[in-house]
Image (cartoon, rainbow, N blue to C red):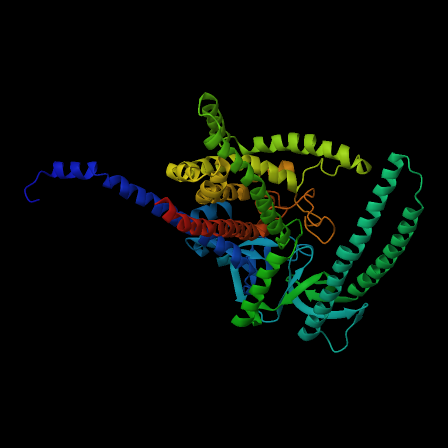
Amino acid sequence: MPGSDPSRRYGAWWQSGAPWIWLNAAAIGTGILAVAGLFVLLAVRGLGHFWPGEVISFDYRTNAGGLHIVGARAGREAIARNQYLEAVADDPGAVPDPVERWLVKTGNRREAAPDFRWVFAHRATNLAAPPDVVVFERTEWGNAYGFLVGLAENGVSVSGGPTWAALTERIERAGRLRSEIDRLRDSEIYEIDRQLERLRFERRRRALDGVERVGDIETDEARLRAAYRAAAIRRAELSEALGRDEVSIRLMDGGEATFPLGTIIRAWQPNRMTVRAKLGHYLEGLWSFLSEPPREANTEGGVFPAIFGTVMMVLVMSVLVTPFGVIAALYLREYAPQGGVVRTIRIAVHNLAGVPSIVYGVFGLGFFVYAVGGTLDDLFFREAQPAPTFGTPGLLWASLTLALLTLPVVIVSVEEGLARVPQRIREGSLALGATKAETLFRMVLPMASPSILTGVILAVARAAGEVAPLMLVGVVKLAPALPVDGNFPFVHLERKFMHLGFHIYDVGFQSPNPVAARPLVFATALLLIVIVVVLNSTATLLRSRLEARYRTVEN
């Protein structure tokens, strides 16, 4: 209003609460921008790792002389000119400001370590992108960079000289042989070992029960050992065929290196690839990351066992925590006499939500693993002792530990949902002759189901990111087998498993080659966030549908 006192106008604006609304909006906007920035950072740093970048070659001048370098640029940064001159003796007139340096991945860790080198851009000359340079992805020792020199079969050079077509054909043959060896190991040999182990347990169980008849066991053992010898002979023949071909390459220092084609997963010439070919290579590498097991101390290969273990643990945890949380909330809200004892229990439940997760891990190790699991071994698995079956960390105990950790969140969420159901719904149901149990399970709980799903969403979000307790109750660096397979009982909750959160910790902080593992840390972190978002989005969609279904009833 013209002529009004500005202090009164600002005072009215302040009392209206508008500043707090704007402050809240600014905080939410900042949070959204931070999350979006995190996604972009993880996507650029992680997903860019699978793109076949250009491989360069250049002459590099050092204080001790010079060398020829071939590799891919893995990063670049700028440092101050003064800082560079303090650390490196160089001609000040030839040093730019700022000084750019490159992180070059030269590979060949076994032949010419290290496989990553920092070089200063102004010292590089004769920069080129040779079209005939080849990149080899190997099963061990990381990538190899070089120029194709020769192919050999059983130690004899291939006639006609090495060609790219002959190389790719033999790599595909080696891949088929390697797949057959893996299938033989993971199916036939593994199944024979499993049956032999079962017979060994049966023999010991009979000995413990005082039964001396073991003739049928000896017959089965002889049959299985014969099958094992046949499978081992077949595997040896395949391994011999896998080592038939060898490739020789010229390294950046002019020397040569020879290694079996059986150790090569794939090869490509990045400087000759079109954009379409690079896109196909990128999608192939991304799929390998999602579908294959890790190798090279988790710094190479994929993360499929970790994806499977994370999702399965979250699902088992949700199945365990939901009924207990709902039952506890129902009792506290609908059945328990409201008084000092119930208030004390509610305070304890709220306080449990603030207990450090590692404490839950120690409790899970002591109670679930040693007490409950050890008792189960004594009662049902005597023949396997002293080797534990359930008395060792595994998927079941990890899920129970995280269910206990997230139980307070579910109880509080369900209680709030039950409190929002109008009292007239209960009274109307009872007036029509329904019992209290029928009223709760047919009227109240369905209307409170959105809150139940809210509790599950919060539990999933916290459980999927926990690492500290899992290291004590079931997660390992590398699990030899998935907790689900085709053998009875099909779901093996006693097995140890891999987890994306622990995988990130292991690769990021325990890796023997941290520079090579850094992109996989970003990619795995992005994958973990995507899995949590997918699980939460699914539960949120169900909650929205339930809210829309029961909104008219509440009104």
